[in-house]
Amino acid sequence: MFGTEILDAALLPALFIAALGGLMSFLSPCVLPIVPPYIAYMAGISPSEMNDGKGRGRAVWAACMFVLGLSTVFLLMGLAASALGRAVLQYRDALNTAAGLLIMVFGAHFIGVFRLSFLDRDLRAEGGQGGTALGAYVLGLAFAFGWTPCIGPILGSILTMAAGQASLAKGTALLAVYALGLGLPFILVAVFFPSLTPLMRWMNRHLGRIEKIIGLMLWTIGLMMLTGQFSDLSYWLLNTFPALQSFG
Image 1: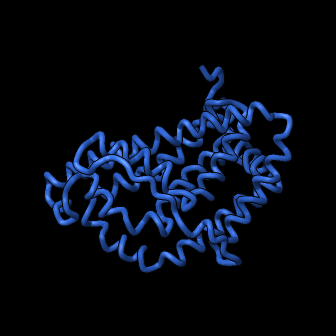
Image 2: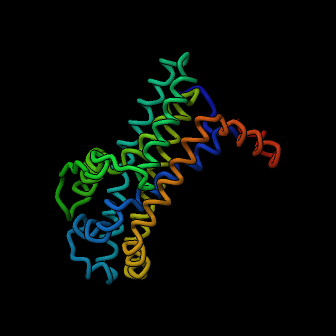
């Protein structure tokens, strides 16, 4: 279907950034605080029931189905972005410049240089019922569509990178890794709750700082895209780790 190798050295920096982007989306102020009660709702239990074995098992299963749902949407987004990127291949340099500038603007918003009001609210699409695997899957679909524009700047950055890839497989792989970076923490919270409760509380108390760190990372990614340092990073990886030349 794709007709190309997915992994090569040039893609590795983008895959790392996609995974980091997923984690940053999980740590965003509109996602992190709701994770435990959201998982409990999907499992059809109370947060306190996540402490026992049976309740934890239901929570883990619900979290897995939820991640499958959001991954479905993100993979389709990646496929669409890659297809669009191939269609406008001749404008790739201009698109890369515009994308770098846009991502830097998003980063400045999170840092607090200025605020874009439409990024301070989310459009939560509700769907599905808690307590069933299908309900958790549908809630995952709704999450991917509805938690925007909250996670939009980060997701948009990864989609832009996907559109700049030379193949459908590579662009879709970026969104798969992004979905993993966002979804895996949901599963880990379900597995290790309540052991992670102190860490979650600490993160909730420092959401402002976390948001600024996210902003700084986004700004840096935008600058790298704008200045072509992604290519420089790929060359550095090849020179530092010659074994990577066997990929692709």
